[in-house]
Image (cartoon, rainbow, N blue to C red; front, side):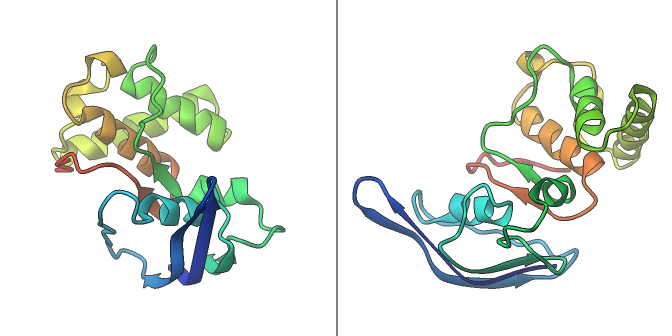
Length: 178
């Protein structure tokens, strides 16, 4: 569960910009929530605060009971459980989709190469059973991915690695997730 309580965030660049003012929400496990609004309305700032990529000026954020804003929180351990898909998709361009997914497991989950590849194969087989659109592109590099396939690759990478919530920040691109 994600519990956001009275989050505020102000940027000083060079004038004061209040990106978030007293924002609160509660998101239950399995619930899908879309935050939409015009450019500059604080959507990305809120999502970045959930993963403590931005530090809120005030308020509280709890993910599965863990206080995200507590300086004692092991933020890297939390980030390993909460996947974040960014507006720029952060795939290594010289690696194919399969290798990007496997590499992330080796780095984040400290899995052996064999274990990471097995987990990636299992994950891609589950994707194929669900007839999700990226399965045919598992051997493609980022440069060869068409349309929104790079977004899907990053989403799949996060879902194979992360067991917890997924936070996705992208511009409206009409992504069809299956």
